Image (cartoon, rainbow, N blue to C red; front, side, top):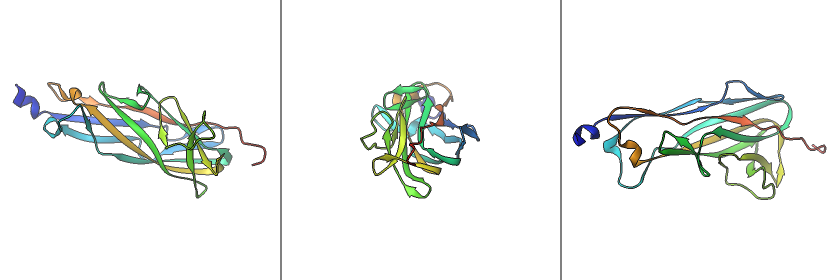
Length: 183
């Protein structure tokens, strides 16, 4: 029985959803790839240890606004813990925002509730990241950002008797910020 279990395929799928035309006031948010498929994972590919990391996947999120707007993003999904979102029953995925630009200008990120501190670009459950440059929120019409998805599974999650599908589901949201009068 153990030998047969070792040869069972695994189907893993991570769905990161955003309505193709998600809107926040005068802006439209789009995701380059609404589904990220990890394909078939076989149990014999598992390395020793408590968790198995899957290859990092990337996608692009774009925001296009008709009028200048503050740029802040959050991801709404089921929290696995304070550091990631649930993937299947025993896994999690983390989201990192990299290579962000507003109107062609490179920007960094900070948590909305910690405006004075620069952030790592980690999009955590329940948090909103604000695009900033020189310590101030950035206002613009176009945001582009690469989202890196790092997924890990507990090796216990691979203890099943038949092929199964695991997924993590959520959506990106553009958070409306008040535009400072000076901008």
